Length: 110
Image 1 (cartoon, rainbow, N blue to C red):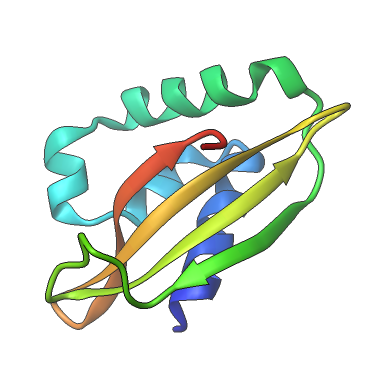
Image 2 (cartoon, helix red, strand yellow):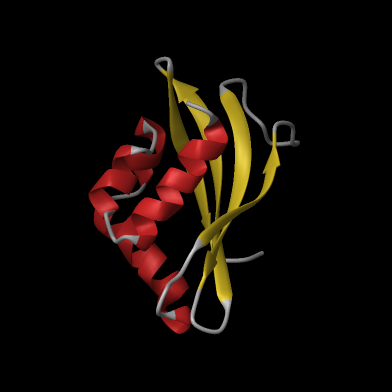
């Protein structure tokens, strides 16, 4: 799977409120620091002002950045359309036991 697809699949699962599926895409290090309810709460707080939610759009990607770790594959910024405004989620994708996983999530626009 391409890291860009994982990023958009993650955002799509969040928008669909399929938090279990989104959480299953995260790395063990992410899950060690963030519970599923905490991830859900962070998402809901981010998008509450822009409900109802619409489409998602992959806006930007990087394969090199200063904080990149050895197992990191890419960084992706995915926009989430709302009723009158947009929000976003930025993710770092890493390789864990041969599988792509989301290691880090940044909620909202920069």
